[in-house]
Each structure stands twice: as C-alpha cells, then as structure tokens.
Length: 179
Ligand SMILES: [Fe+2]
Image (tube, rainbow, N blue to C red; front, side, top):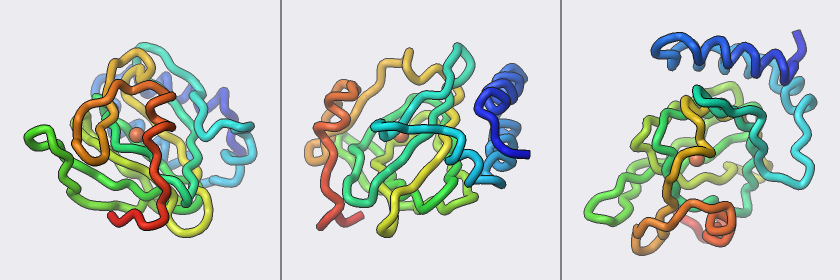
C-alpha cells in the first residue's frame, strides 16, 4: 500500500500510546521503510532540509534530508530517537561528552532500509555518506520542540543553546572533515 502521511501519523500516535513503545515504533518504521519511493514522493520538503510532520506530548515525527557537502553540528535530543533511512546513507558521527569535551566514539552509516536508535544520552553530528543526499524518517519518543537541548561546540565541546540559527551557523563543510 502506498504511503499516506495521515495514516503514518495516525499509526504512530496509536503506537506511542502503549507503554514502552520503543519496539513497536521501530516496527512501524521498518514497515514504512519497505516502500521508500512512496514516502519520498508523498512528502514535499520545499526549500527546507527537514520538516516536522507531527508532534504531540507523546512523540515527534520528522522527515529529513542531509547533504553530503555539509556536516550538521553535534547535538543532543534528550530522548530516544529512531532514525529510519529511506534513500542514500545517513552518516551519524557519534560522540560522548567527558569533562566538557567531545570524544568521538564511532561513526555509523545508516543505509536505506536500516534503522538506528539513539538513546537519550546520544550526541551526534550528521551528514550524508557518498555523493547523494540522504532521506530519512525520524521518530522521537517525546515532543522534541518542547525540550530545551544543546548543540556542542566542535572544538571546545561547550554547550551552545539549540536554536535553528545556531544549528545552521555551526555546520561544517564535509570537505576535509575526518570522522
Ligand atoms: Fe539529531
């Protein structure tokens, strides 16, 4: 069956109501990734790099594109997130914060059809692997837009208030970026 944004939102809301919905949200995402073309075709990003499809007190649903020439800065979510990739490869550069400094832990490329779940302590920088943009659905298990969270300075590891302005100002070109 082809993807319908309304039905996806409805299904995710139903799942988010159950206690400990993590597994069931992953399953819904897995099923949705089975027909990636119909998801990408049904959602228009316009000029945006990411759009929120829906949010309430129990979850936040996003559609995101990352480009291979730019790396989005390290940030936290303070909640569990499921990253399901529809097309291309989403490169997640993962960090841990130790004594206020960012330590690179590992880099994981999530390929089309795969899901990466990050816990509430997860910190990542993100870009697209290879030479094409990546497209993904992100399911956050809490209302992302209602939570105060931080970006982290690339060099000092210091917290920076998460605003979209700071987010885009702190991007780095992927040329010469090693991680
Ligand atoms: Fe993120």
